[in-house]
Image 1 (cartoon, rainbow, N blue to C red):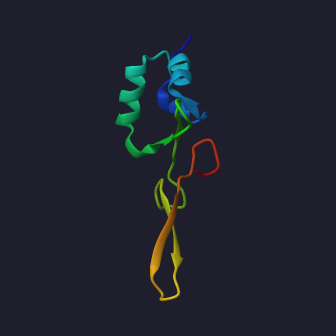
Image 2: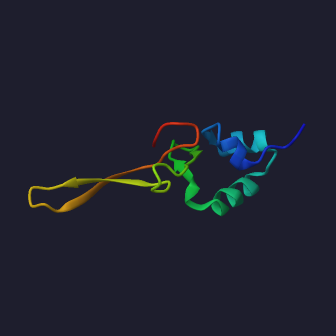
Length: 92
C-alpha cells in the first residue's frame, strides 16, 4: 500500500492528528513537524482536546486568507473577519 502524504490527505479531509497519523502512517511528532513546515496553509480548528486540521488554498488571486472589511459611519475601514478557502471546498 502506497503511503499518502499529509498534504494529499488534507486535500480531501479535515482531520485530527490521530486520524492523520493512522492514514499517513506518521507519528504524532512527524505530523506536528509537517504541519509546522506547511505554515499558514494548514488551519488549526479548535475542537476541545482534539483540534482538527484543514488545508487552505489560494482563491480569487488573493492568497489563502481573505480579509473582510466593514466601513464605519466615519468612513474608516475595520477588519471584521478572515476567510480561509479550504482545499475540500467551502470556507472557514
